[in-house]
Each structure stands twice: as structure tokens, then as C-alpha cells.
Image (tube, rainbow, N blue to C red; front, side, top):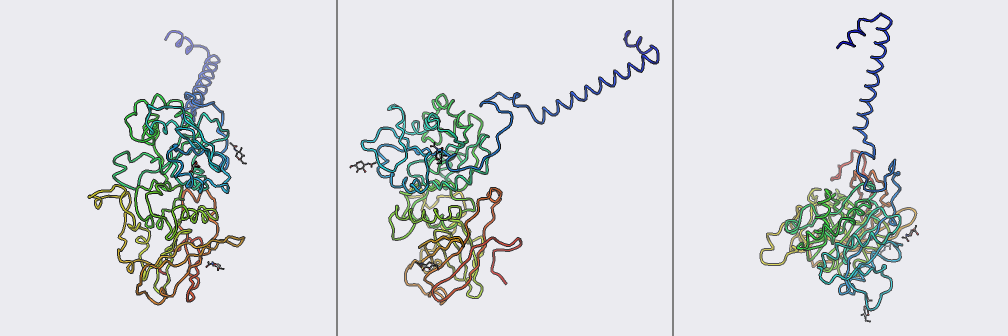
Length: 468
Ligand SMILES: *[C@@H]1O[C@H](CO)[C@@H](O)[C@H](O)[C@H]1NC(C)=O
Ligand SMILES: *[C@@H]1O[C@H](CO)[C@@H](O)[C@H](O)[C@H]1NC(C)=O
Ligand SMILES: *[C@@H]1O[C@H](CO)[C@@H](O)[C@H](O)[C@H]1NC(C)=O
């Protein structure tokens, strides 16, 4: 170019100036590119459409407490009478919950004591129950309860383990969009609905920023799903439209099974138990008690050490050739002989399929199950939770023998009447929650009638197996 060639042919001093200018320009251009790159890696908040009031920096994660969770319980004027006593178990005064609300279709003729505040939803006689209950998301938000990080939804026959929910949700950043729950135990039920849908009876949690967006778009979205069956499928569909998928937490239990829940409860996964549902459909979880009494009994252990409830530890008695499986706060099984650990951790099929009918034998579950012998003498001997005592030294839980027929057992098992388990409170550590490890146990002594067991952290290289 003319001007360029003229500059090029200029005097040496002008040429030096030119070079200086050129390098300065180059430097600026590199700076600009670096800045660009930085923006690419760390886009400024302004680069996104703002959904919520924009903040320069996300606030540090505060330690979550139960008051940061708003519990929405879907009920109806017709079901509440029979379900109120269930609700009172997990929502007892001892839990100090002030952020639970009960959503009803109609006002109650007589308001009952010791129930959470009742919200009567707008009249919508033309709408199905599924549609009304899905709208609880919106109605819960319009309560404008301050300081809520998570909105938790469940039915009036959902039992929440509130302390454990707090621990589970602590793993996630409540400033981000999360939809957390679990599917059904039944393959058929998941196939009928969706495999990646949180089943509503097991309950699910939605982080506050996602709940706010969902609340805004809910009505326009729900119109497209009037033909859907439940509220959970509707909420799932609207979250899918927002591009959000389910984060699975196996501690939420829809309990789509019937009969005896023992097999499910005695081999609970390492995840903390977050909920239980369909208690009407199963037998009382402790023998010789009503459903309510049995749940109250379990919740006595929940009040002592919520995180450890149903957590399974297995130990082996080498001298007497016994395998002991503890489901803390619930039951202990003593097997004759050395059972392989993976077998002991597998669900025993004590329960029946959710769907009743002729072809129930073909029912499939979302997990492996093993046979539960119909002959009680071929089953392990079961000890159920009796009492729990906690002091500064630790926690003692006693389990007493459940007699199941006149069986010929080995001498060591025959005389056993009681098992006492010592443990420490299962700590509240988010890192351990993210990468949990099963606790170990030792059989300390086995006097004639009483076996004493201690639960403790495993050693780094320690294996859960028959020692020696
Ligand atoms: C619930 O109780 C806690 C602790 O007493 C308190 O900090 C919180 O503000 C209360 N929340 C509501 C919505 O009343
Ligand atoms: C309402 O009153 C009836 C009759 O006294 C009683 O049977 C029922 O349990 C009450 N409902 C509630 C929710 O307490
Ligand atoms: C439970 O264990 C404690 C501690 O060993 C013992 O004092 C108590 O008698 C036991 N209770 C029952 C009912 O077995």
C-alpha cells in the first residue's frame, strides 16, 4: 500500500517509532484476546439472560438447616383424617418444624390440633387432583416464606426423615437448578411413567431458584399435560421443558411394593434414608404393633441418630461361625455360617409386587433380589429394635429376638435372646456424604443370652469379611 511503503522508506528514527507503535498495537491485541479468552472461560453474569436478581458473586454456601427447607404436603379433605396421624409422626413438636404446610382442596370442617398450617388451594372443580397437586409448587412459592433454599414436596402418606434430607441436600448448591428425588422400586411403574421422574409419594426437592422459575411457567406448561395421570408426572414434564433432569438420590422411597417391607429396610443402600411412602399398603414394619406404633418406634431411633437409621453393618463371628447383619434402629439378622457379603447386602424378597393380579410373578424390580425362604427355620434369626439409650459416651440400641416357629438352631444361636449394639452418632460431614463408606462392626462378646456388638469406622485397609 502507498502510505505503508512511504512509511517504510522513511528515516531510521521514524522507522523505530513505527516499530514501537507496531509492537504496542500487537501487545494491545494480545491483551484483548486474553481478555476475550477469560470471558470465554468465565463468562460475566451479564453474558446470560438474568433469571433472578443478578448478584456479582454467589453467596457462600451457608450450612443448611431444616428451616431452609419448605415442606409441602399434598392432602385432601377426604384423606387427611386417616393420614393425620402419619403426618404427626415426622412432623412432631420434637422436630421444631415451622416450614411445613398442608395443601387441601377444601377447608376442613374442624381444624385439627398439632397439624402444620393448612392452605386451601383455589377452587378448581374442573381440574383433576393431579393438576391441583402440581399447582402446589406455585402455591408454596406464593407463601413467600423467607430464607427457603429448597422446596420439598410429598403426599400425606409420605414420611420424611427431615434431618437426613438436610444432610442429603447439603451436597448440592442450592443456588443452582436442582430437581432431586428417586424413581419407583418397580420396573413396571417406571415404565408406565418415566424412569427419570421423581415419584411424588417418595417426595422430591427443587432448589429455590428453579422452583421460582417453575412457578412462573407452571400454568402455561400444565395446560399441555391435562391428560397426564399424576402431579409428579406433570411437574416432571414441566421441568423437562425447562431442560432440567432428575438428580437421583436413592434415599427417597416411593415404596411401590406390598406386604412385608423387611427385605427392603434391612438392606438399605448407604445413602441416608430420606422418606418412606405407601405405609398403608405394607404390613406394620415391626411385628406385634400397629402401623402407627411401628413407625413411632422407628422414629424413636430416628430422634437418637437420624443418619444411622437403617444403615447396614455386617460382622462375622469366626469362632461360632455366624454372620450378623445390622440394620441400625430396625433389625438384626443372625445367619448360621459365613454368608458372602454381597449376598447379605442384597434385598430379600419379603415383599410382593405393587401390581396385583395373576402375572405378578413376572414382576421386576429396579434392583437385584434374593429368595426369602418360606420355611422360617431356613431364614436367619431376626432381632427387632427394642430400646435406645444415648449419653455422652455413645448410643446403645437393644434388639430382642423375634421367635418364628420351633426351629432347630445351633447352640450359639439357640440361647441368644438379645443383642446390644454400641455406636457413635453418625457424623454430619458433607465430604463423607459424597463418598460414603460402610461402617465396620465387631462382636465384642457373646454371653449366654446377650451378644454385644460395637459399630465403628473401618480401618483404611480393613475388609468386611471373616477375619483370620
Ligand atoms: C423457624 O424457626 C427458626 C428457628 O426458630 C427461625 O430462625 C425461622 O425464622 C423460622 N421460620 C419461619 C418461617 O417462621
Ligand atoms: C373432625 O371431627 C370428627 C368428628 O368429631 C373426627 O372424627 C375427625 O377426626 C376430625 N378431623 C380431624 C382432622 O381432626
Ligand atoms: C438394653 O441395654 C442396656 C445396656 O446394656 C441395659 O442396661 C438394658 O437393660 C437393656 N434393655 C433391655 C430392655 O434389654
